[in-house]
Picture (cartoon, protein in one colour):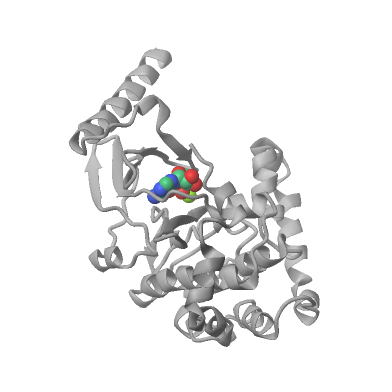
Length: 318
Ligand SMILES: Nc1ncnc2c1ncn2[C@@H]1O[C@H](COP(=O)(O)OP(=O)(O)O)[C@@H](O)[C@H]1O
Ligand SMILES: [Mg+2]
């Protein structure tokens, strides 16, 4: 009985995907076009321009129309619901490089200039989300993807499934994921735009240093990837590790050798324990850290060209 139900569900999902593929005249072979799977969804390539995310239709967040105008937000362009209402499908822009978690996992460090460009793109996206009164809530390197744009690399935020309006009731999706701010990790307090700016700080640290000693991939993503069961059976142990690591943050902020003064200053403003003092996305975009990279556009283009060894490596995906 169970097996029969299972096959039926799979069939319905497949038919749903095939229907959308036909609607967009896809030349892709469905069996070979799976791009990735995450916590809830699977993503298939429709063409060099589009992809399709399908997940169970258990919840749905309406995304403001104006988000489509921001190229750093990879939001659904068209949304479909399967006949029985079991599945929801989002057609979105296809991004042809890896996500930032791939860089971090493979210890591919970016230069400060490269990091500034990537960060600037992410902040432009976050600014739109926050200024419209929303929080992404599933903001981590796995949900930030890179793509080529006119022989340069551009970053875009993906996966808006958990996005919510910011209200006094808004809480984090996961209290412990290695990227959460102190107010979440220690108090499970209201989750707001400033909580996401702290995450931005950990991501910047990981991008330029390879790993972050007080948070990030090593404290959650890596553990979960090794074994979800191991994590769930020792949840308290791993969650406590996140807390203890976060407590050491002030020591590291005090000694940022090998990092420019501008970058260290931005890190301090993003990683302030007190969220009232933390910088917003709009303010961060005006920080001197970005001046170098934005003013010297031509030089950046060369550095960001797809000739860059890391970028070629990153583009080797199915
Ligand atoms: N726009 C896209 N272009 C190319 N690949 C994508 C795109 N969106 C998602 N993916 C791939 O699918 C994976 C899962 O997508 P995501 O939306 O994060 O699903 P989940 O909600 O399950 O986490 C991503 O990590 C990435 O590898
Ligand atoms: Mg995701």
